[in-house]
Image 1 (cartoon, helix red, strand yellow):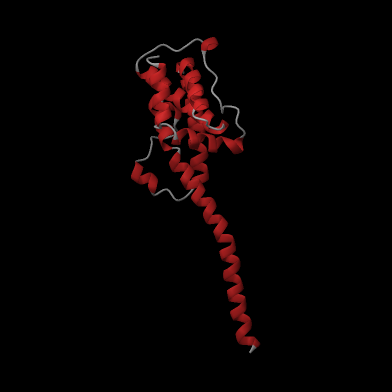
Image 2: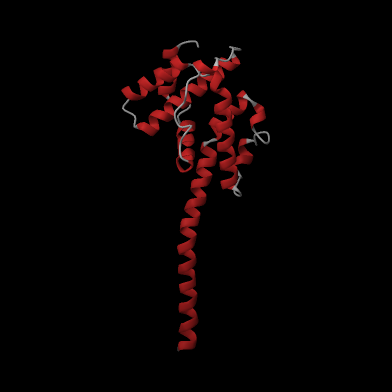
Amino acid sequence: MSTAAGPAFAAVGALLITAGFAGPAGANWARRRRDYRALRPLWDLVYRADRRLALEAPPARWTERLALRDLEWRTTRRGLEIRDGQLTLRPWVDPAVVAGSARIAERAGLDDPERAALVVAAALRSAVAALDAGRPPRPREEQAVLPGLDADPAEERAHLVRVSRGLDGPLIAEALAAAGPA
């Protein structure tokens, strides 16, 4: 009996161990994929402002849905390109939009991470609009400092995902409308 039951129990044990490792690995992969896809709107915004920021042209949306490999590298690269775009757009950020969006976030009762994301999203949208309108860049001493630039690497991706998800929210529209033309 031990020659029949022993291999069966070993096989079941191997399956349980494999399933135990596969669960967290699958959850980690799903989180990376979710973050990679969530960063696309923000990446599109900064790429539209300066196409030199990206290593390559953006993939088609349907091709991006098929991205299954190298998600950590792709997501990290996308985050770095977004940060470069944020620094590139900084001279066009309107300090009135930053102050107004901070007031709107406070009035809405947002917590600190959501407040920072709202301010950055509104600032970047206003900066791209100012750049598209041909406005000259602000001098260095008049440039607004955006929250989140000094975020820890562990928090940076979560911050950028929050910014990306909030780009088209009603509070952003309210902040941009309150500031008026920059």
